Image 1 (tube, rainbow, N blue to C red):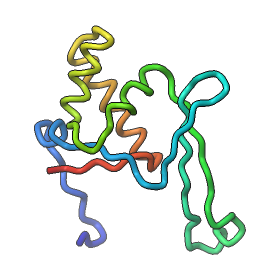
Image 2: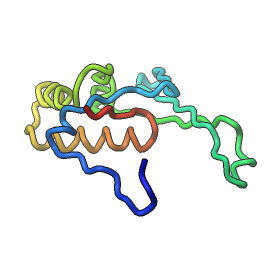
Image 3: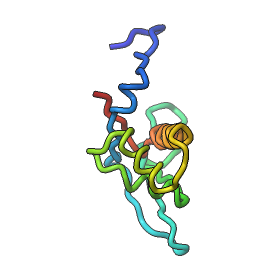
Length: 121
């Protein structure tokens, strides 16, 4: 348990590459009218005073481009971040470092939006 004022544990590069992204249960996906993948995230309202004026469950929608769709489709609860980066590098023929930065930033964005959770071993 963290006390106030303590920072969360820092994860080194090796452990972060070995971690496994998992799609959260509150996420569903469909194909929109333009053939693009659309994620729908159901978020329960908070417990604060102003939250009383929000619906119990809010839905947020996120549309993914071709690169995002590829990465999202790689998330199966078994593949590591490293494996996803390697698949991305092969598919789009990009530099390894560029792929690593792009995929890591995208996964971080999905985690912040509550689309995925990342299991650190």
